Amino acid sequence: MSRPLSSLAVFHLRRRSLLRGNLLVLGSLAASFPLSGFPVSRRAPLLVVPAVLALCGTLETLRCLRPRWSLYHGGVILLLFMDMMSICLILFFLFSPYLF
Image (cartoon, rainbow, N blue to C red; front, side, top):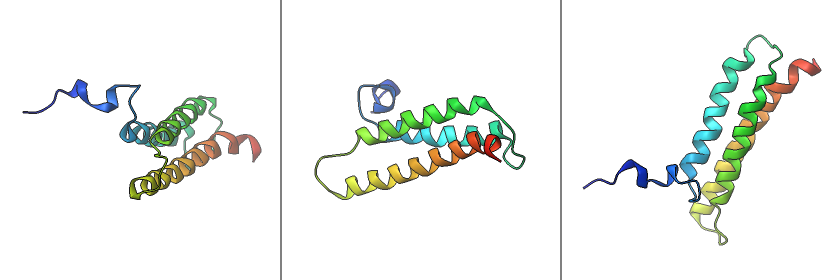
């Protein structure tokens, strides 16, 4: 017996989901490359959308932290570092054409 897809935590916004947070961040990062025209730096104010979605994904990952330290807690902290690197890259794509 398999569960229906609607019972997964990914589809319920009130429940914590690491998968939802990671998909938001990595999807935003993947979308930011074509939007920025990566090898050639060009201005793209539309990159604000992936930046906001990546921040929302980071907050979703942050919700999954537990108060006591465990290996799960350490894994979530590693995922938060990955989220921060992705947000920094998206913000670099957003602001670098205006600075250089």
